[in-house]
Length: 162
Image (cartoon, rainbow, N blue to C red):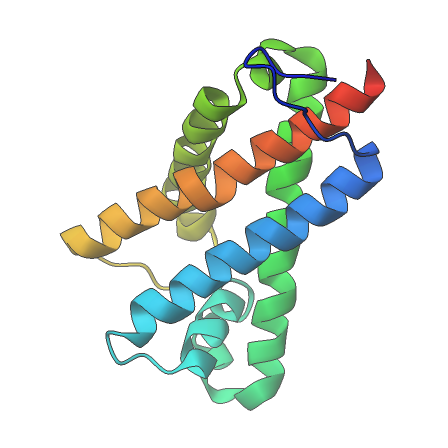
């Protein structure tokens, strides 16, 4: 199948698109966190433990590598959920895969808002004020590294279904 621009659009089974989308979104988002916060002096283990703190609270920071591994598992579970939600929505709202760049960027922005204004406040993680660089980076990675890949993988699965 070709896109409106005449380029070939790869097709994947829904299961493959979900698996690959989860891996890509998880890696991009985690790499961003490790680089962005690492450049600000935060140790990788602390970044991973902060993810686990959503489930364990402050105790995550005294759990060593066990809670860091839990943080990685939780991170990829969240990535899986984000990609799955977009894939399911795109089956009901076909316009999402017709304009994958726009819908992916908007979905990433929505994912950022849901995570930061609903999920994190309801979790056991401590949340506080964010600086402008943290806010801008968070929005950018969610739009470009979360929403956009989720949309493109959903599109690859929808092309195969046609």
